[in-house]
Image 1 (cartoon, rainbow, N blue to C red):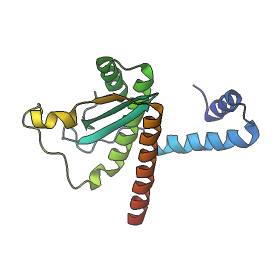
Image 2: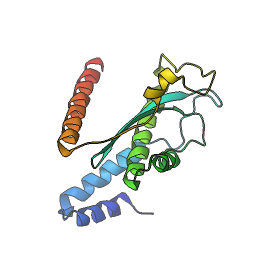
Image 3: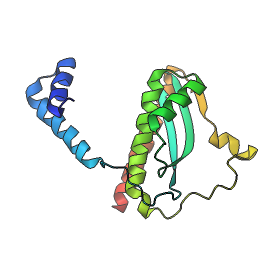
Image 4: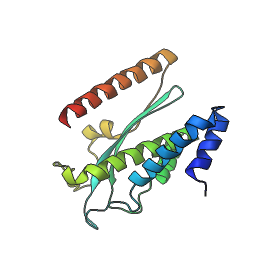
Length: 173
């Protein structure tokens, strides 16, 4: 096991940063995130339907992946890393995508766990575990290879949208 201070020192060494100002700040940030992360996953009711929508919008190099899945937070066997490995294998994507996908899923699950109790509109009950042909497009992964200019524009548009959403969220808090 490595301490946050040891990690911060190695990081500063790797990035050729002066450790004096950065090590305490990095270590404090790591400790704050560890304390904020629940020791046990939040399960509201054992065996209940706790499905949430997880949206993926991942860019690695010039490849863009857009997808969405329903994720049951109550199912202890669900694992973002295993899901990412299988999805990437099925789509023929490289290992960089595995990390990006699992990180995105974990971040969204963390948010959903904190806000699930306040959610007013749970996902509709699933009667048949298959999507109709009319729904298939929105529930299938979409991969595209973009030029450098297209990728820059897409990322710029996403950044703009993220800032807009943050401003909107801050008006309600």
